[in-house]
Image (cartoon, rainbow, N blue to C red; front, side, top):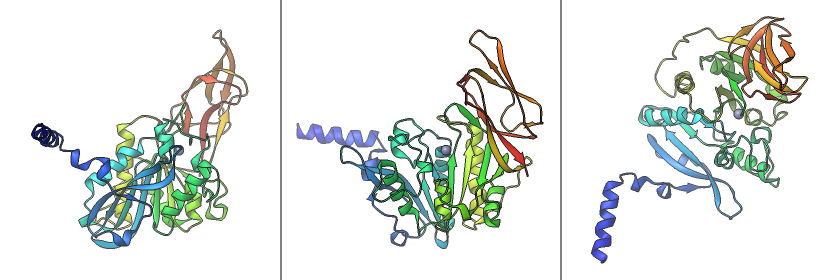
Length: 346
Ligand SMILES: [Zn+2]
């Protein structure tokens, strides 16, 4: 009997080459200690951030590629909003193709940042707050503040640069655009080399922490961060994945982590100095007319709101010239529903 079990075990092992690499064998860590990692290696970890209602650790997956030579530390994270998934295959591609032996510097890759929200298929943390409006969190705060605080603590003092990968929220679609503080020449360059459709000027460091975003909280800790929006929530989009990969590769070139060239953009980049959402002022069934990344002129018809019987109830027009950064994809529109995110040209 014992022999049979052993034989079965050997067969199981042989038939399942991933057996030896399952999650159980990946080290669990409480902090990121780059000094302890050998140069020129790739390392997977479960990094503890918090604990759940069973008292079990809530760990986030972290992949650290430590270059053979010294250089800057770049963190790349995705899914701080739990249903914003396009960044995950971008990160997976980078960690599976970049050779740490050829690197001068370190990549800290976090494919899933907001693990509880990701498991809920939800943008929001389980306490229904927005983790990316909760930064820098609080050591003795509520559930999401606690998570935010400990997430930030693990990155502070370690990273030089961070790329925060997002998508639109549920019920909306986005272009490929970058938010960055364009007053900072390094951040402006990092934004430009993403080769996005649109670059949107973000808040300056002087107002850091005001909006509770990871980007602002990192800025307050002298860590240079840009936010990249890659399309739509809860899906994988191949075009957005490829666009994201090119941007990260260009960043590795710009920071001289890899000895490669920055790829030239394949299309012109539209720069916006500011942006705002346009909302409905009545309820009904909404049809938004322009596509994302489409330029619109002042007075152009942008949306039609129908009543439940198919009659036109309201028509909406562009208040000024601009470009559609994102728009509603959900026709169910109570009064005050989002229509489109209008970028205003620099
Ligand atoms: Zn987001």
